[in-house]
Length: 314
Image (cartoon, rainbow, N blue to C red; front, side, top):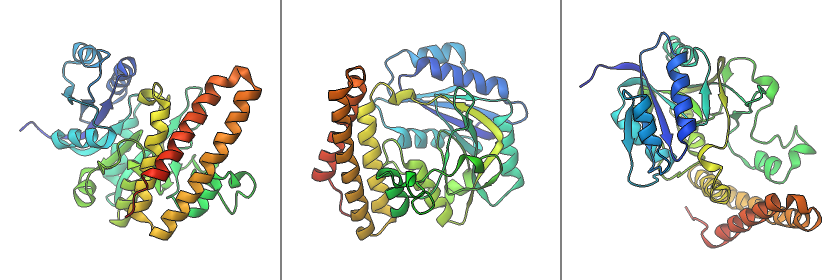
């Protein structure tokens, strides 16, 4: 057995060769005080990701899956071989800033009741990203999906917390899985990621289980990273829309009552139908936006069909 390390960085990769090389480069150049390893779990990429990575960083542990296993299952495969006292999930479309791993690990060391900690993430242009969210409930579903947060933000706030709260360290309900450090002991207690979430939503479910298990989740902006966005999902947006729909419903099935779940489905159906109507008008009236409008119509139509024909019960 190899010697333990402080942090095992686990990166799930799927056809993001250049981004993968950049994120590993950034982790190497910005981590100074923490002992760590990098584990890349590749979901059957066909773009030469594995070959390029092993050539540039031969000491990185690479696991190649025979198929695209999704985000949760691939991360769990990385956890199974990890040696760290903490796991750090890092997306390929992230660039680490100086000392981000050091700062997050130091925070976990100093706060034994904290199960997970996440940095401030920025857009490529330096704006702060809204990467702290509330647990899903009917009020924020109405705010987000029926756009009521624009009319009555104090009543229907939506899931994202205000940007002006993201300048200070504080306990949070849901932290983004794009860059998330989680204590191994906490994972041993509440379990790894739920592999029923193929992509998206697994961080919300994990945060719920950590909170239910008595572990605090903390947003810590003294650590920072850039999250470019897109990554593996950019080439398959309609598939991504459906993955989000399925994951959201899985969360409601697990953590809410059947009555609340059914109300949520009704909200989502109204959202999808309204979006189809609006984007169809855009497609007709604004020829320059037809590509985007067509994508939105197809995505919302596909989600509506899935909700009506594959609605999980229980």
